[in-house]
Image (cartoon, rainbow, N blue to C red; front, side, top):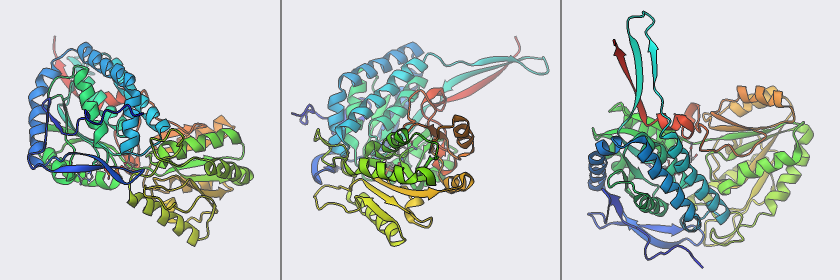
Length: 483
Ligand code: NAD
């Protein structure tokens, strides 16, 4: 039995509080990755609708910025309550359009809703400061103001959470937004627009435009003088393109980009805890997470036991359609992702790695790749450099802690790293030297709405979540004051 009412699901563009088709009449097919069949279609925005969405966000900006923090908090809190009530329906929707297992979708629906609750709580906790100028001549008064209209661009891998992680703080800050969801997963974003309207978000405060031509559509918004900020989550490659475009207008940007997370296991680690952590860090979302453990470095003394345990756990995972209740790992998002995983595994094997489980995509219509473990992966294998984005765990044996730190940091990325050790002092030392914005110490999951999520190096700029996430959508206003 399905909870999603497909007949009532919004599939048009949401601009200025009104659902409307694209002027061109064009629509985008939404595909179920479990079956490779079309589920439905959504309106396909062009530049005309992008400008209309900015018109709407701009027209609503002053009134929304003028609401009280308490009013914005209570609206977000209602959004949290509605999302919690509709968790199962949203989970089914995500499992259908993204393919992730219901376990993953339910977890995402809860995680996504938490951004509304957290920012409902943060909306009323923005503090400025007042200080005496060092010369003693006046006061330095600092307050925070909403930055204005923000364009939000999100990926397909967490269709709800990547949207609420931006909409929550933007609305709490007093900003209005245009959300451009990923072309592969527009339905969840449109369902969120509906839910936010029901929660009392006024017309024009949140606008949603799905498009098959993100370049021109996002480009038109970034070149619009009324837009003040771009908050992007996606690949480093697209992030670089958008940073270049944003530079034309010196636009404020927040960038959550790709990762290549190392997962370090030292000899003194608790084996079971390391395996539990490895399964979460690798298999959350079927390996399609920016935080996914991409490379496992395991010290010689614990290596063989770790590989045995990981092979056994990965080998018994049930692969299947996202909406099948027995499924533990769903399909990848599209055919190209399967081909990429297959290529990376074959490249590693050709260079000397061995497969201990998985390694062959099944012959099915959907976009499946099986949970796979590779051992003895040589340093020149492409899989150690590329973001895998599939349920594939390459394992490398190491002896020397200094060498493993150098290998872990030898990447342009720096989103998250994982360290497992029984010696917390060593763990803290290693965490301090890992070049990443986040570290999981004896933990395979770091994401938390209350914590500042983000990367260093080419994994991004800025932070989402925590109090930092709210300040990203605000600007400091300093008033030099003589009383
Ligand atoms: P992607 O970069 O291909 O697309 C992201 C978004 O950008 C989509 O909405 C897409 O339509 C849009 N886009 C694509 N080309 C564009 C262009 N030329 N101009 C404007 N917009 C454009 O990424 P993806 O495949 O959707 O997502 C996977 C990537 O996202 C991975 O690299 C992953 O690590 C990253 N990611 C990062 C985080 C994080 O918080 N750091 C979280 C989730 C995903």
